[in-house]
Image (tube, rainbow, N blue to C red; front, side, top):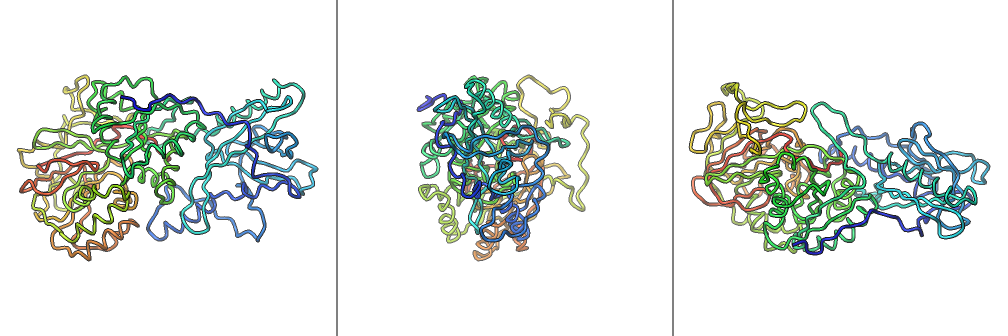
Length: 587
């Protein structure tokens, strides 16, 4: 049932109030425009990276020298060749002060018109098109004028702390003659060109496959109103929906009413009418969606449809990872939601690895985040009763599980991503799957392809057989925790695998051996908030990147989880499948 579902209309900016924040005060006063937070953001990236807590995937922009008190910060230089220019009113109301607009491929520059009393001509502000989500033209309320507005979400923030994207709308009035239709055509031309230049450039990198959502765009939003603190629907209406309307993304909202509701929806529905599937909930709902899609006869074609995660749960691990991969500073709650919604508005998507998990009872599951057994899974599930606390539930759950620290017995084996010293070489199987270089997909062994068949787990042997000789078997058989993660973040505030990427072809395997003290375990989790837990060189903590793993508990004790959802405690094994789905990504 599509409770509350609706089809939104493409975004249109209201014709009033778009010109606030700028005007004549002894010349153009665009001081709030002239503080592009990208400068502050670059400085914070450098500072964070030097502390080991963050890394930037791109080279940060040079930081400008400090400005004298009361001075306006200059716009970013290097906007490129001029594509459009003109003199318009700096606001929607008649009599608004004039300004000269210069549009380049990278920014919309606002300049003092020549001969104005504000001083020498030159750029006073620059709206970066990389921050722009939409632009629209419309007739003015009076006379023959027309207007066009530009909506951006630049990074802004306090002097201390992480910057966040904040909405900035500017409206310009076109009144170049008495012809109303002519003025509207000029406004439409500017608005159309701004929208075209705001579309992200598709990166060209070896082995990577990027794409951009079409405009207008149609999105199916699957929303769990009970996830997290129960504010997902309220946050969607207050934060997400207005941004999507501005970006010309029409939404159909499907509100889940029971477990597996989203799984059934995406498994059985005709999804051709939507360009992307958006999940507004925790990681568990996306797990339902992924596995529902993989049960479709046309799964291979359907998995090309980009997925998007918007944080509406407690952990929000994938949303925090996506924000991390985009090079953004660490943020939580509505700041994280705004960042992830902005990524959806820009529409850039790329490929993501999935892990295929097989259990002794015959189940086959697909996972995008991680598989766990022991302490971490205990914290995740035991803290469910504190869901109303939001992300703080994990802090309380950690303290409780520390007080009753358990040890679990089992055998852990893995296929290292890089052969370990002294291990026998892996046999070369001529019938093993190969990688399709163009699509980056793992193809099934020759002669075994079948329409609709799921990808073969070529690295695994049946659970009833011993692991291959070139695998590594961990000698210890007593563990506090085992966790295989494929994204950077275990939770909003837990940077577990800083080196992870969306499609690095690796499972990042962590295991804690028995004998670790409660104090040492607590130090590990405190350091994990900054991603520096491996720097502690704890002898009980081991990390190894692998391509496949197997876990065989000695007894059906302890909690197993996959993507935060409970799994029966039994032997399980998994392997990475490179680039099996697509996800909205900032970079």
